[in-house]
Image 1 (cartoon, rainbow, N blue to C red):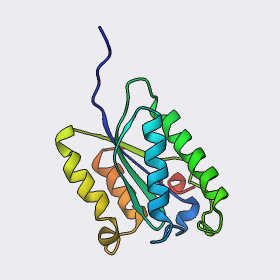
Image 2: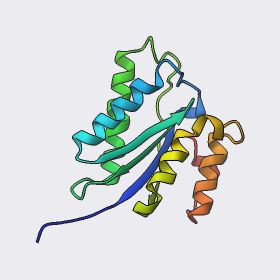
Image 3: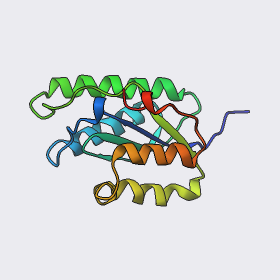
Image 4: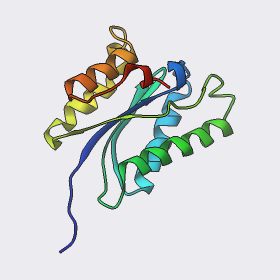
Length: 150
């Protein structure tokens, strides 16, 4: 028998010290680049988005791919791309060490896509820090606030 899976993830990570570096002129290029990395890893990106200092990736994880390896590879490759285009990403300080990863039912896919599409509006009300803490608390993930944004 072959292996069949359907694992829908939302992965969220931000820049070191939550420094704003994404702008209207550079974010779409980064989102497309990250989507390409996911596709090369046999994962299906439904949407890549974010706002100013963080990224949301909503994707289906392929059964042959480990989540931590995938996030590491996305971060590493995206840093290399941004350093190669330094004039577009002048304020990029590097990625924070960790990430948040949450699984969802496939039935939640459309709502997740809408959520990521609405990041600019969403962040008029709450910060990335508040957003991440809300996710962690909603999913009962133990965390130490001291280490969230390093």
